[in-house]
Image (tube, rainbow, N blue to C red; front, side):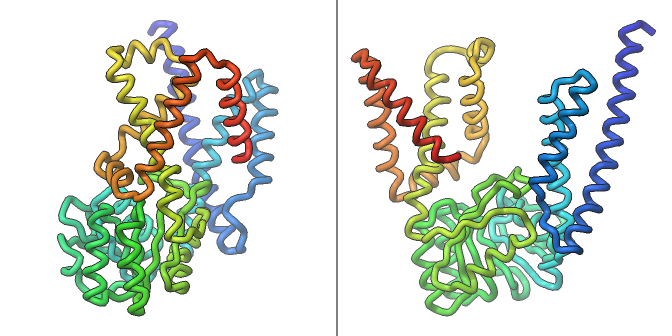
Length: 363
């Protein structure tokens, strides 16, 4: 065995030890999660996180290692621990025990997320979707064929289809709590209000995270009361065992805000990708000579490009405020182009400094 092979073998043994310790740490995290649940303590303790990170930095620096390396590793461990504790709390709460839930559109990415999320709370989950669906769950192609009455129904279908599904549920007087998760509310808000006026238990939410989200700490859900306050409260209560933040938003204000939050950000990244593609430069060439700013922008653009293009088109096309916001974006780009073309450094500096002040308010 060569010296290099011997060294690699030793590294492999250390890696196995580290993985074993990580598994043990996760087991202890689950015990901590159960203790917090039983004693009523919150899942997240920011003061303790600061202490853990500070301790790791000190220990690393004492061992001749960079403190930043230890902090980055410990932050990953903290997130993994919190995710485990959140799952433990959900299971311990058992809010869904003895109850049935139907996820319409449960074969889609967010539909699958809700299937797993509700199952973790003890709900007996059924799926209505014409396509492929999660295994081991009762499945029908159409929601009308789902057997039994459901205490909870989640509409996770495409935005345009959700309005029609809700209208059919209105006619059928579908029982239990019903909420949609549509990213745009204009197509669904009228039927939701009709259902509310008819005495049905309806609300509307918009999860501001994607289907790959495991830990809900730091995430938020937009909640809209469409005329049944008790139903809105019940929809929020579905997430009570998590660390997600519930933000109440008037349903009539939702799309205007989302035009900026999602519409503009998606459009900027799509334009960025297409501009690179049409530049004639190969992606690997640009990546090799990239800057920090380019790498950061490319990472966001890559994530956007990996999403469902049909959903992203709906977010642009179905938002009544979308065209206006995109026009504002185009006007700003044209203004910036004119400033550079005219050599107006003072205005360029003013735009950057004004933007810096605006972003400072977000902290």
